Image 1 (cartoon, rainbow, N blue to C red):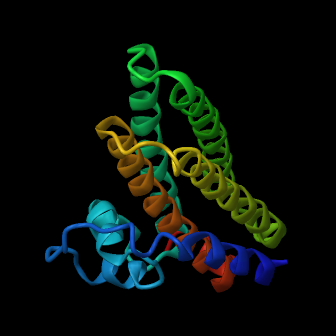
Image 2: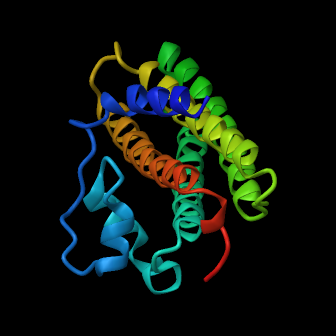
Length: 197
């Protein structure tokens, strides 16, 4: 089951590689660089998770929680942006319908992210593998929902609002992908790494 989840993860993020970018971070220390070494978008990971470095150190559980927490924060920001865009009535016709679908997708994304963080905060050695299986499933579902949101705009006329929306959702998807990689790392390192040092 875990290998299937890892395969799905690789398939979901493979199309993001040319889309995701970030400024190169020169101030990330060895802890965050080591943690982010398993992610697809390392510079983005280092930039977004550097503040957690001194607390998380080499603890895979703390890095997984940090990754999901940052993803929730980013998803909330994008969700609020989409709601504001929807209230402005600036999109018409099919674009407006696709925007509504995208908002629903991000609601599902946030639900799955919150469920994942809730489980990561209560990991138990006896049920660790089942818990991690659930978290990987929910994180993968969050990525799928974000992908669905982006797909809805693929054939639309290139306009500034749509481009900005796509860029913001793509950035969120890259952050989600990084969080999922950190969750997968925790799943493979085992239950002994889920406790604080």
